[in-house]
Image (cartoon, rainbow, N blue to C red; front, side):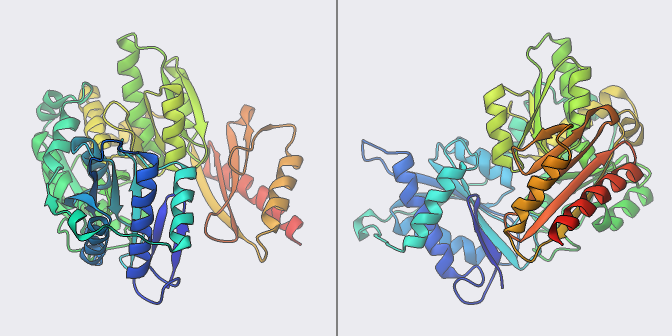
Length: 471
């Protein structure tokens, strides 16, 4: 059994004793702490009630966790709007639609079915800052509870925000519905039997796209490993070829990450999702004379975003790993588009959160306007290969020693220490990023280069240096 408490929320395997898995006790404690800090963060001087939106993915434990969370919110005197089965971006937008003070998303994202989690939102439908998350952890650990009197208890209302979310996506200026309809696309959707099976086919239908559903029943019985990586998408690749489809779409259980499959059954590559969408938006914005043109991704994402941004006359910024770090940087620089190389597209014109529906609508718009195949669009993007490795350590204290040694060894190169150590070999268009895991005594190593061989060689070089330090 596993329980992980972090500044972004609490997640774990369902069952076991408190502290070992995500138990009812943990859920109540953490929800109470969220309410307590919500009142401090967002005081209502007129005594008005607080309102929180709760949405869930389709995993097996969802109903149990939902009942506990909603019951605790009511016990704290907080109005509850149950969004029911809802993608993470739908719940984020629902906070704004409902005029709520915050939101709680019940999802463990790409984790297997035995996991669940509580992800916490502010009044903008965005994830809490590190300081706000830590305050909730401290409050929950204190274990001091003071629930509302019986006269302050409230009722729970229910509302499905799916259509409102889709309305907002289709209303975006750069979503070209007419061009998509005219293209006559056929798309296979693998929703891994979660909430993507409810929203993604509805989006495609409204775009005039023929949708072939695959694993689209929201049973929570994931048909394969739910992380949308190429090794988990063999069934989708085969279906795209068999159905003579133009595109394959895979989403994770809460539909914030997006992976695409070319018409020939080959992966578009997850890192390319954000790059392709960003290139389309940058081109459109440049034609309209929009300035400044700025993009953001995390330090472990492909250099390709920087390349297409600068090619369009824009400026690229890198943030520490983590969605809240990316969105914070996007707010600071006024970014047109941003996201993460794991297939997370963040388009602030609609909301500052990863959204697979936005990603699909913009990608299809680009494809339709260019009149090319998905594989041809892939070839038009900067070509890089990313490899990912890890170093397991016997002592967490060794992490700092390894990072310091790598930084010193490559001191003559471009070094970024905002999140671990990233070495950028500018002339050869290579980089390597080492960062500590938030949950395990390991160092993650990401390396990118124009070819897989170069990337593997760079990762091996850094890994060898690190292992010399460990001894």
